[in-house]
Image 1 (tube, each protein chain N blue to C red):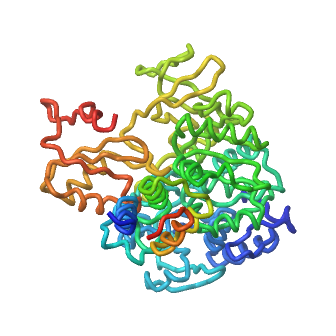
Image 2: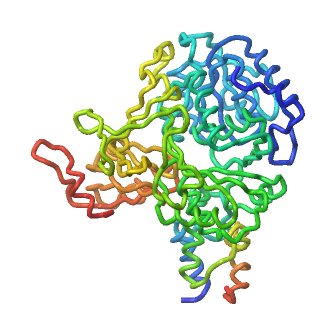
Image 3: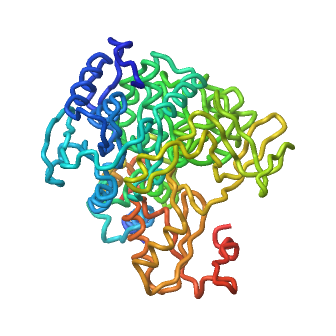
Length: 78
Length: 469
């Protein structure tokens, strides 16, 4: 599986949505991505890539695209 | 009048999301102007958000003998109509973007909110002491409200101010909705003490929240268990928050591990972590664990608040006197509310509970007199701080999906919905999360062959325990 596929799956699983729904998604754009969903999403991304994210990165991860950028800091190229 | 706003004239009462500071004297004027427009004691439905307009309505109405019925601004329009039908309020106090939704005449606007005249005029008589109507169930739209009196609010506010030692130098930031008793009690107490309330609609998972927190030098916040789980996830313990003094927790039992973790953090960093316990039926708070005991007694919800009293009763209603024995928790105090209302006719009812609240929670007391919640007598769960009734959920599922049998159980923050029809998992999950405005992760829909029942047809919930331990 490519990193992009892993990332999409982590998003879909974390937010309990379909993989097709992830592209272009933003915080609070759907009911699933509220603060509770965000906590699950972060856990899912951390598990998938075996990383621990910093506070700043957790609160900055406000969209599907933004998450890709943030993961670069953890040496994960998507 | 509950709050003497004029007393703290030049103090800041409110700091809004865009950084505006509103003094007590200006706030007082705003509340008076609004109350004059209402002009009489009557029922007003208040649509709650953590914004200036919402706060203005609440304080103005309560301080001027007008009775607010507090609902979430997120409530579905159909649910709002049902409540309007049941309670027939004289006015609605709504955010400006909702004006057109209801087609009522706008009679006054301030701070982004508007007063809409419904055309009703005192349809239901209001009991003299009735101050406020609050729901126990978040945003499900249930018509059941708790009737709180002026005396209830004053008594509870006084004791919270006393045990949290609140004074004019406090600045609390909002993390909970204003239609929720715990969120409201933070506002009540801070405005009573002449302190400031920092209003934000942002969540702790957003950068803007922490910016507001730091720029306005917030000294305290409150949180239900899932907020503390998020804070832990957020690596809260490494955050630089030099002005933070107090963190309070209520709205369900925090895991003992997290209780300990936050108590240790507080002790190390010279802060106070105060676990509390309460119910809307007791205005807001009934118990608190004094901060100096937070670590020693982690897992405990503490002792009765000043002016209140606890005891435990056995199945026959007799008081349990020995320590470490589980019984149903009973509370007595002036903050025990008047009773419930389920329809407009109930608003003229007087005090039905006479200062005694049989909580429905099972608890034990240790030898030092500290209480520990051990379980719950009634069939409900706390999901993200709000009560969700399990039997009601079963009825909702069966009504919407007649092809399935259904039984609900689970643990706080995770409801298990057992269904017998196949391939309905996604649909039922979506239905429940929308109806209750709760994140879908709160529901685990499980297909099983058959709901276990006794010969008389009663669901054997014990047999479902194995699915969630």
